Amino acid sequence: MDRRSFHRAGVAAGTGLFAAAAGGRAYAAQAHPTQAHAVPVHPEAAYAAPGYGAPAYPAPAYGPTAYGSSAYPAPGYLLPPHPGTGYPPPGYPAPGYAEPPYVVPAYVVPPRAPSYGAVLSDGLTVPWVLKQIAAGDLNVCFAECGPPDGPVVVCLHGWPYDIHSYAEVAPLLAARGYRVLVPYLRGHGRTRFRSEQTPRNAQQAAVARDLVALLDALGISRALLAGFDWGARTAAIVAALRPERVKALVSGGGYLITDVHAQADPLGAEAEHAWWYQYYFSTERGRRALLDRRLRRDLCRLVWQTVSPTWRFEEEVFDRTASAFDNPDYPEIVVHNYRWRLGLASGERRYDTDERRLADRPVITVPTVTLDGALDPFTPPGRSRGYRDRFAGPYLHRTLDGIGHNLPQEAPGEFVRAVLDADRL
Image (cartoon, rainbow, N blue to C red; front, side):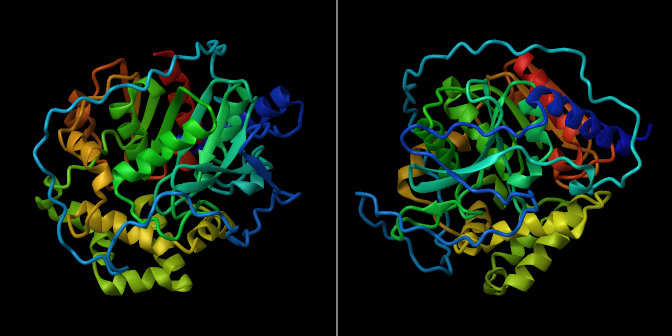
């Protein structure tokens, strides 16, 4: 069996496993009793593009913060010296989740005929419901599936992707008894800022605070975090700064916490070439491209093709994700994220303490599984040796042959196995 068939086989068995566990019905997780409410899903799960009509959310009590123009003038992001301040834990008690049964993985089965990448052709309907909840600066839209009383796994997408990177991973985990949450990050999908006065800031500490706020709003004291790209960075930051909130970590790409000062150092020519869009977004020309719907989609499709060179996705798979790029804050969020990383745009002072701690490359102590795609241009094979010292707790690493950047969507079976293993470390 070749590697591609193995990953597709994982989805085949996972589909049957989910049907057996769920009685052939999709989970409809209960809404949070006070804040969350379900958003209707297309009855045939055809992934019609939502209208993204922003509801009228009342402005929060905090006042506006000066932020500068949408072009993000470049004052530079200078991190002051680490003052050695502490970071007291909030004292959330561990919920004492019951350990789910861990049997021999059922997703190693003979390959099937359908082409790889045709997510919808496999008959795997996504058993999640979309919900909205007020959390911090945002009204977060998130997908949820699995038993509402199960141990929580939060799956976090990257750029240029959305929650559908976990369209196959989520039901496989739900079948194992997990409550799976997949939020749209700020600037994506139906997630909205609660106030027009809130800066459209995408520095790493801001996105990580969004995750903590979501856990708080849902009353979740502790969760297993899994992500890739922006999502892996976000999960790693929460694991580093708030380890009492994290049961275990799965990080696609390894240790991705950004050191803005180190970003000033040039890389090799091949590595710099892979980051072409980062430099494109540093220009006004690149920002204007993100404002144009056609150019924005063409750009994101090209990134999919170049960073996952063997992934043969269907156009409908791309289209259902690309609808999340129509969020009105998407261009500003994407541009600010990459300009901030290069020191070309400022962050907000309220995140300075977190950023100072992150600049020291803090060690992550929670149980961790790191994954690298062998064909991912950002994580060449063997790079795990370069970040191994950043993980001090129980640890496993795997490089996935034949797989590119979008790990959970290209290799859902392996990603599920990583979550199960992290939960047992």
